[in-house]
Amino acid sequence: MFGQKLRELRVQNGYTQETLSDKIGVSSKTIGAWERGTREPSLSTVDKLADIFNVSTDYLLGRNQTPEWATKKDTLELRNFIDENSQGGMTFDGEDLTKEEKEKVEIAMTQIFWEKLKKIKAKESKKNGENK
Image 1 (cartoon, rainbow, N blue to C red):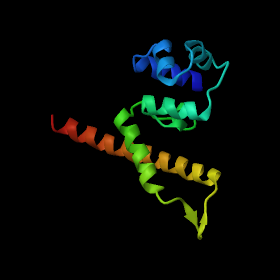
Image 2: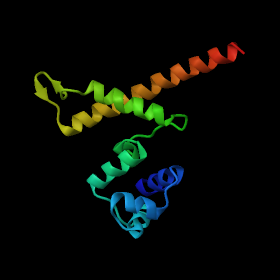
Image 3: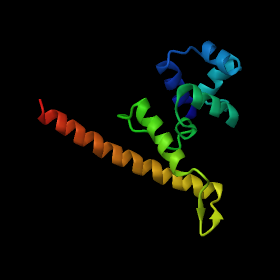
Image 4: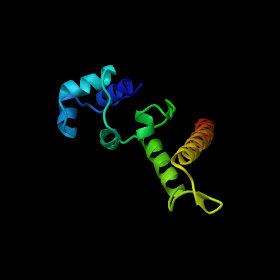
């Protein structure tokens, strides 16, 4: 899953394995191994890759599936939505949520975000279709 997403993003963004490897400081053979799924990058490298491709680490790792119709702008809006709604930490009854609980909240927020955005885009599409 990770390797496939990495390759798709690399190609979509016009990087060769060599140019991407130069950008993050690994060999092009390492990039190839990641894409084939024979090796996996460190979490800090996954963070770097997510920044380079302007996607979430969850997307890169296959934890959330961004809809096909979503644009890069939509993905950025999702990240902002999650960041804005988790500022100051997440607590319940005065106690901080565990990492696992926070991940579950983020997954729920992501699902809600995509559902709402899909409805908004459908309305806009219908409205634009009626105005023609």
